[in-house]
Image 1 (cartoon, helix red, strand yellow):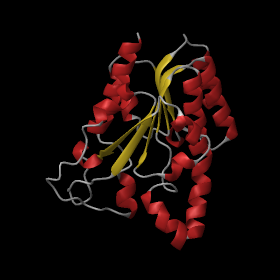
Image 2 (cartoon, rainbow, N blue to C red; image 1 turned 30 degrees about the vertical axis):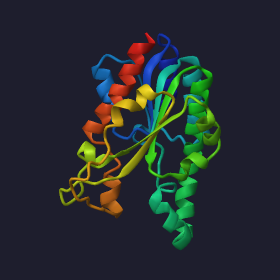
Image 3 (cartoon, rainbow, N blue to C red; image 1 turned 120 degrees about the horizontal axis):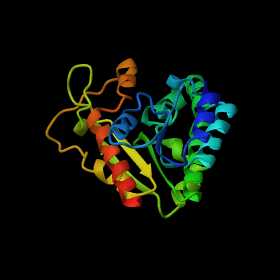
Image 4 (cartoon, rainbow, N blue to C red; image 1 turned 90 degrees about the vertical axis):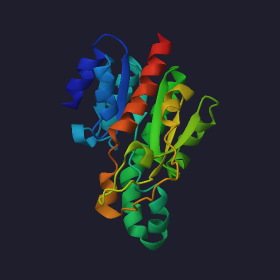
Length: 231
């Protein structure tokens, strides 16, 4: 159970290297563990944890404060915040509102996680589409106003993100974080203009929420570089 997980983590030797929030398949954690990093796990619906719920938020905050983690990697749900949400908000407001209500609690919680990481002199990284309204949610403006905050905008076509017809999908994506070291390895993923892009929609677009292993490796490179320099 989640409570058992928190108990084990809070009674383990202090300090993890990485934890994921809304990590899905947690490919970055898989790669980091292969490189001997200590993982605090993946706090996601797929692991039975609902960060929209106060109880699960409280348990994570207990872990974050009592155990501590060097890097909190977050990928909050983007349905209500990404580029496609703008049209939905005006033309299908009720559907957008349902999506927003399912998204904003953990979107704001991730902001509080980032803010606490700063206060604890630790690091964080958050992935969203480019552009995204998520960073207007409280307390994200305070987080991004910190001079340590950085931004990298990439194109997933350069990470072998492939659409249903086998062609590259551009999927502009932003990484906000606490250190240039975390985002530097992914800055190279900018479209070179040598190919056409697919524009999937619906379920095909949802399948692209899973990062390619190339992108996951780039993020893991940033995490591991930061950890090595922090020793």
